[in-house]
Image 1 (cartoon, rainbow, N blue to C red):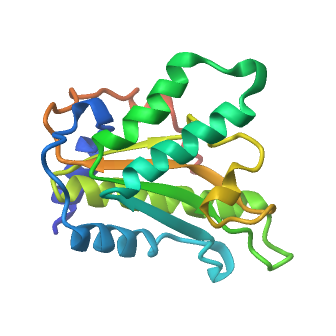
Image 2: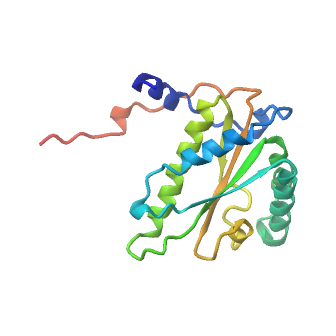
Length: 193
């Protein structure tokens, strides 16, 4: 890959939402394995590799829908919204694969928690770029049950660990529109002396 090709990949990466997926097509598991492998090459302080991925596909998508909607019913309390419950029940079924994004807290005492979170975010960027390189659609959501107390335990994570959301993957039926960014000269400052 040339630098020009890489620059184009980065610039053309888009979130593709479950409603934009072609539900009749499934992504080959071998591609998902490669995407996860690419994720593990993200930078991480102290070589902690704090990511933990739980992949749902096939009937597992219904398992995820049931699991998260029941947890939401049991724990949302006063913030409960009927439309949010319906999304939790229906969205996973539109994807080919859904990956629960976990952060396993480093046991190395000199590594701040935020650095483990940042490492997982870098892994997710690798997932995004990999999905795009395969011509697939992907979407990282931190909605649903992501930040409900104890939800991380549903995905093999301990009390000190964090659930950082879900990554939906599918074939694209409806492409996302082109995007714009604020000019980099408005978001950077160079100090030369």
